[in-house]
Length: 471
Image (cartoon, rainbow, N blue to C red; front, side, top):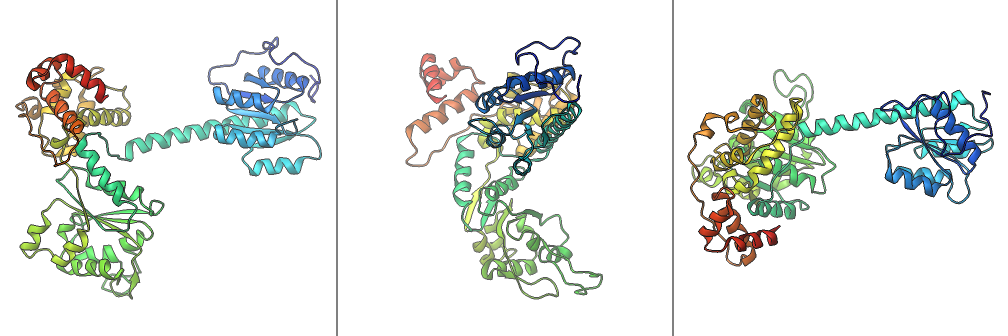
C-alpha cells in the first residue's frame, strides 16, 4: 500500500477488510469525521487493519450524536468542513466528553488554526496528504493518553472513596442540623460544634467550610487535646527564629497555614488559660502574635468543637466566660447515633462500600436480621463505633453477605432497644409528626407493617398507603 492514503476505498459502513484482525478486547474506539467519503473509507480501512474499532461520521452533527451515545477514546476530524468546522466540533466534544482525545486533520495553509485547536484541547494535528504511519502513531498515542487519564481519574475516585469522609443520613434529626449548618456556612460567624465523641463534629466543620466563601482555601484541623500544652501555643500561632531555645528557624503556625480558609479547633475545651487569652484576642481583634514575633492579621474562619459542657467548664473556672461567648455565636449539636437510628442502614451500606473496596473484596450486603441487631444497639461510640464494627465484619465475613455471627459479641448479646419517645417542637407540621411516628414504630416493629399498624391503631392498608405517600 502506498504511504500516502489512497483516495478510493470501501464505503464507511463496510466490514473490516480482508486480512484485518478483529479488534481485541479493550481496543480503542476511533471516530473518523470527514465530509469526503473516500477519505473516510481509506482511514477506516487503515485503523481496522491496525486492530482498532472504527466509527465514521460525515458531519460534525453526526459525530456529536455518536459521542453522546457511545464511548469514544479518540476523534479524528477534518479541520475544514462545511457548516460546523472541526474547531467548533472540538469545543463541543470537550463539553460533552472531556476525556475524549481529538486529533485534527489539516491541509497545508491551516497549520495556525490547528495550533489554535491544540491550545483549546486537541491532542495533536496531522497534515494532509496523510501518511499511514504518522496517523496511526498519533491516534495510538492519543488513545494511550486517554486511557491513562481515565485510569488516573478512577484511581483518584477510589482514593477519594477511601479517604474523603462524608455525612451520610436522611433522618429528620440530621436534616435539621444540616439545615442550620447550611444557613451558617456563607457567613463569617464563628461556629461551635457540640456533641458526643464519634458523632462527626469534624465532618460538620468540613461541611460548613465546603459551603462557605472560603471553600477554595485550606481546611486546617487541629486536635487541641493531642498536642502537648507546652507547644500548643507555637503550633497554633507559630514562632520566629530564636524565640526560644531550639527555635532554629521561623515556623508558621496553624493560623498562618489556614489563611484564606477555615481553622477547625477540635477539643477546644482542653485549651490552657494562656492559649485561651491569645485565642480571645484573635476573635476580638482579628490578629495574633507568633511567639517572639510581631502582630499578624488573622485571615481565617474559626470553627471549634468540643464534647465537654463548656457552660459547666466556665462555672468551674476552667474556661474563660468571655471566650465561651465569642465561640458560641452559632452553636450546632451533632446528634448521637441513637437519636437517628433510621440512618443506620444507610451508614452500614456506605461503610460496606468503603471497606470492601479497601480490602479488595466483592461488595457485601447486610440482610435484615443483621440490620435489626445493628439498629437495636445503643452505640455509645456513635458513628465511629459503627464504622469500626463494619470494618471488622468485612474482614471476618466468609460469605457474600454479612451474618449476625460476623458481629461482635456485645452487639449480638445486646438486649433489644426500648421504644424511644419522640418530642416535637410547637408548630411542627402534622405530616412531619406522622412521618416520624410511622418510621419509629416500624423500626421498633423490625419492619413488620402488621405489628406497626396494631401499635398505631390503624389498618395495615393505611400503613402501606402512608408509606407510599412518604416515599
